Image (cartoon, rainbow, N blue to C red; front, top):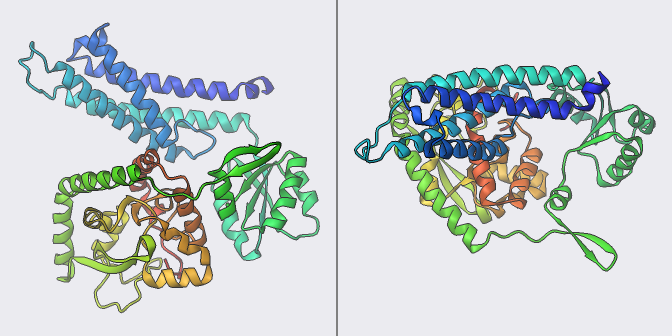
Length: 449
C-alpha cells in the first residue's frame, strides 16, 4: 500500500491522460466512418489532433481538469463533459472546414453530425466511469484527514461544519472550537488539517504558527488583507522582503476589450435565446396575466443606480420586500422553473448591451441590501469598484444563500485578480451552474437573500 501511495499522483495523472486519449479515439473513430482521411496520416488528421489537444488543455485549465480527491465525482463529470463537448465542436468545425475543398465543390457540408452526437454520449460515459474509478482509488490509498475547525464566533461553527462535511470521504471532523479555547494548541497537534473561519488576525497569526510547527495543513477563510497578499508580488529592498500589491485599475485596453466582448456576446446571446424569451413570456402571461418583466433599482460601479430587467418570477403586488425564502409561496409555478434554470436572468443581456452591466463582475445588489450590508460590513462598498456583472465568482463558486461577507470576499477576489482570460474562464465555468441548479439557487431559510 505504501508503494502505491507513493506514486498515487502519477497513477491519477496517467488515468486522466488515458481517459482523455480514449475520448479522443472515440471521436476520431466515429467521425472516421464517413471521413476516412482522419484515420490516416494526413493534413486533416494532424490539424484535428493538434486542435483537439490544444483546446482540451485550455478547457481543462478553465474547468478544473481531472482533479479527483479534490472535488466530488458529479462536479468533475459535469465540468469535464462540458469541456469535451466544446472541444468536440471546435474539432468538428475544423473537419468541416478541411472538407471544404475543390474535391467537394468548395461547399460547406455538415457531415457525420449523428456520429458527433454519438461520440459525445460515449465520452460522457467514459468520463463518468474514469472519474468514479479515480475517486475510488484516491480514497482507497488516502486515509481520511483528521480535521479541526476553528471559528471566530461559535455561531459560525455549524455552517462551517456542514460545508466541510460535504467532503466526508476526505475529512473526518474530530472537533470544532472557538479561537480562544484554552487547549486549542493540543488539538492542533492532533489534526492533519485545520480550517480557520472568520478568525481575527492576531489570533490567526499565532494559531497558523502552531499549525506550521505541527505540520498540519491549513485552510483559511480569507480577509481583505489575505486577498491583497494573494495578488501581490515578491519584491526586495536590499535584504528586506515585501509583498507589493498595486492599487488595481483596469487599463484602457482592458476596458475596450471587455466592453466590446459585452456588446458582441450579449447581442449574440439575445439572438440565440430569443426562442426562450418567447416561451418564457407566453408562460408568464398565461399563468396570471401579469407583467412579463420585473424591473428594480440596483447599484453598479461607483454606486451608480440603474434599473435591472428580469423575467417576473413572483406574484405581483408584493410590496417592497423582494427577498426570497425557502419554499416562498410568492414565487409562481412558472417562476420556479425560470429560477431553477436561471432563465429569469436572460433579460439582463439587455442591461449589458446598454452598458449598465458587464457579463462578468460583482452581482448588482438591491439598494436596500447595499445599505444594510454596508452598515453591518463597511468593506461591502469595495464591491462597487467594478461594474456589476451577470455572472462572477460569487455565482460560480457560491450559492444563492451565500452570506454577504463571503460574497464580498468572492467579489474582491475577482476584482483584485481581474484579467480578460479570467473573465473567459468564469464565463465557461458559468455553464456548469445550469447543471447544479438546485444547489446554486438554494434560498435562505427565512433570511434575506
